[in-house]
Length: 264
Image (cartoon, rainbow, N blue to C red):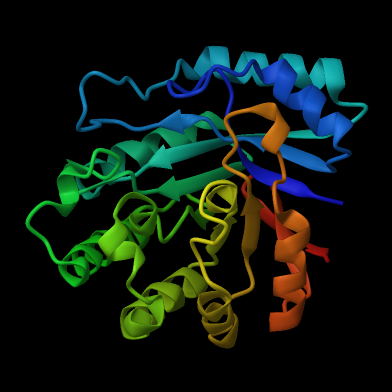
């Protein structure tokens, strides 16, 4: 039974899929739970894209989906919050008022530069890029109160070939600080399977997941990061096998921001 906790719909500026189509596909795929996590990115560095949501409409539409399909699948109200150091307080205020089940804290920019269009990588070695990225990540983890998991931790490898050649095991000293901060604060990490669709490899390697586990990390969610209905829960069977081999006994589900452990 799969729990997809990173799913987009037409409320995200980069997604055209109607929420009802996503939900109907989740039912067809026999998912146990699906969490809608559309984008909010305040002060996004590309002004041509508006990654903001009318949260009243968003909440109403999710409730409509629950009323229509709730007898066949559990639908959670989530959000993917694009976090930056200078907007942490604003993000916290939004989440406090939003009655969310689950919040992904994701970095789509760093140093107020875009990752997707590669502005951030210009003039930096792969190591310099990673260290700046992890510096901002740690600041946000320490200061952003209202999130559940850290989204696509190794997103840099998605957008830069030089960075993708780096081995995250060389950054375990930094990751140890990040993981311990998450664990102390009862936060977790996401296994984002989107890279399996186009690179056939995980953003977070089994070695990194094993390191997280060795430090006492328990909260872990699976997310397809899908923007189309037919890739819901993509690769989850493969991930379950990896987690079992490492020694994880559970993945995590959420409701009203409270974690619940589900045996795998």
